[in-house]
Image 1 (tube, each protein chain N blue to C red):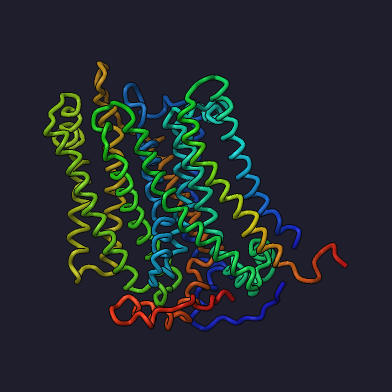
Image 2: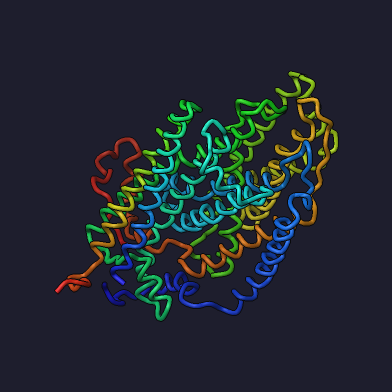
Length: 78
Length: 456
């Protein structure tokens, strides 16, 4: 079960990374097509920091709680 | 992982009871909702098979009750996260038993907001085109972005304060429930390090989620107001939508609180004082909603621009007049009459006013979407729109499914935040000191440190 605790932080973090990746892709497409660059930069500059906070939550808060939740007899340790 | 070491205080036992077992009463309540949901799914399969021809949508009325539902559901979602975050940041002590119920509404109803958009698509498979070929010049893509941000943030904001309660339930549950809560509780043992991380996370999210929530409904309003359509092109649409959203959200919260209070005998947690406080908020929002509605319609009337006047008179004296005046009565006359009077500002009075507001706000959303499209500015013929049984069935199915999911949520998770209630009990002295600190001449009584958290 202790290994399963990683699933939630990894899922949240993975989603945050995927969304940031999509935003970067939108920026790239906008640059290549020379289309809606100003709008894309504006939206990305707001959304990417928010998802970086979600990533921090996944790693520091959820990941940290799960790490501390493991007892001294954690799985895979002698 | 710690074993079962803590025994519920007798008064908290009522909070654990719904989570640790399912009664026959629950299934009896869930069955009709499930049937309605299945009926809605059947109607949707017909729409998928035969296309949007089975709906009342047409040219020029391309948006009907699906988009009405979208705006309505997104509005309801403001109940939770926004109210909970503001009350948490203000350290409003009366928030403690109500935050969970509010946050759960937000997360669940947001799915139905997104779902309404999918219902409105004749080819839902094309939804992925938005992700593949989207252009962020379109307000529709702003919507996709802001709602995804809000849904993710609200889910995290619901989950974080749930973790200590999940651990409490884990230590009492058996069988599959124990496995579920052990997984979801992330090994919560209430160590100082875990407390520190959790409190930081909740604090950051409480601050972050407020501008996100406000931006979501502002962006929803921009989908309309960025066009040149009559009565949509308005600079106050953003705050008007946000006000309406908080208004309908508080109403939905009061109804859900009354339902769980009655179903799970939570009278000692959800007290008349909580309903009184929320009813006063509802009253304020009703007055604010009236102010915005009046300002919006007066400027259109006084300007007298032809296209705007046609929409305005269609609403006020024409085809949509019954809905318009019903909206005014339901959103303003009834709530103000009931809630401004201390004798009728009871639990029952608040529930009646809230039910009135929920219906009234749905009508308001309908009256924003449809009359403008039916009376377009461009030289199209004027249109008529009446929803078909398919649209009505899908809407009924969506509402039933939302209620069913909310019922299931209350059976899986404590609907009152147990650790926050306990923290409140232990923090009474700190609250007294804080209140004394607000008053002149009592600065020395203001607390230097936060109360010890009671998470286990």
